[in-house]
Amino acid sequence: MGVSKKKSGEIRGDLIPGLPEELAMECLVRVPFEFHSSMKSVCSSWRSLISDRSFNRERRSFGKAESLLCFVQPLNSPSPVNSPMMEGDVNEKKKEEEGESQTQQQQQQQQQPRVTGTPLYGLSVYNATRDTWHRVAIPERIPLFCECVAIQDAGKVLLIGGWDPETLQPVRDVFVLDFFAGEGSGRRWSRGKPMSAARSFFACAAVGSTKVYVAGGHDDQKNALRSAEVYDVEKDEWSILPPMAEGRDECHGFSTAKDFGFCVLSGYGTETQGQFRSDAEIYDPITNSWSIIENVWPFPDLSPRGRTAAAAESTGGFRGCKLWCFVDSERQSQPRWEIEDDSMKWKVAMETIRLPVTTMTSVFAGSLSGQAVAMIGGGGEESGTMMVKTTAEKNGGKWSHVNTPCSFSSLPFSYSSIFV
Image 1 (cartoon, rainbow, N blue to C red):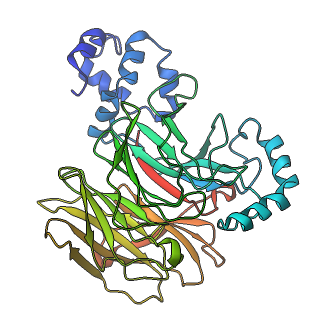
Image 2 (cartoon, one colour; image 1 turned 120 degrees about the vertical axis):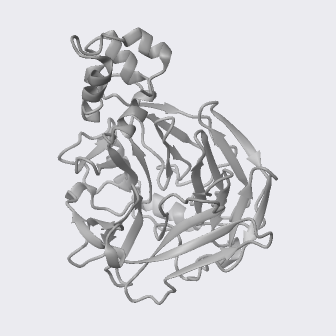
């Protein structure tokens, strides 16, 4: 049993009258997550049990936890059929339309990436276990292009940085969604302590059970940043890290296997926008320093964002990152490659996954529960559809289509996955 002795002493014999605690637990862990908030109202013992994070570990140990894919995406429709609009969205939409011309002028002056109007962004959730979609209600408008990262042990999803929806300036904001707290919907939003620097299009990854690392991106003048910092989700504190060797805008972040390191892949400098670097930098928390790994990213014309994802967890003594590299069916690439840094301590290993689309199609790819996932856009039969690749089968597995409602079909900017 994963429930603490303190908790078990409080709930023993009270979970389901007439059933042994072990059997009652086997029953309760099978209840779908959407009903957990209602279960808390049944009795004090159920409230105590479900509010404890060990209950989620029990669900995982029994194989009953649900796998969620959370992603930040522009809203296709002002009022999705299966989800109410966030409060205030109607008025804000009118303001956006009236201020569209002014917004475009500001973008040109600030040399920011071109955005048509000021779209609304939302947090969408695909429940892969139950094959359902929904959009999480948020008390305020989230920043455009914010990074989405999950802390599994804490049961939290964070939205970090991005652009202010009205000024289109980078922000320091941190929004925290706690899946295991709160009443009503069973979910609760709060504001975390802001980053020390405003940034967008930066590398971000959860490392260990409580830490989130960020590095690079760009500031309000579109300067590529070298700065890095780390957030402790339990303490709600940011700590400054040594800067990277190079400024990296539009870089991608990953946690390393073992040693709680942080890898920042590719990106480009201030004077070389759109020319993606071939190297990566890895932060070592033991030495509090960065090291460079050369010749990791072979595509100078292609962003690693939405084209790379963490592969299945590494075993043995591998130290570094094992990543999937998603390539179009027409792009030439090695099936796999592995590069070490000069110290021979860190490695980045890439395995190619072929997408069933051409280079003319826009794609956002990632991973979910050990499987590759991809959202397809830009025309064709697969447009607006999410696909899942089963990796356990022979010959590299196969792609299968996921039913994607129209209101959830736009390509996401960032994503994370969590078990609940």
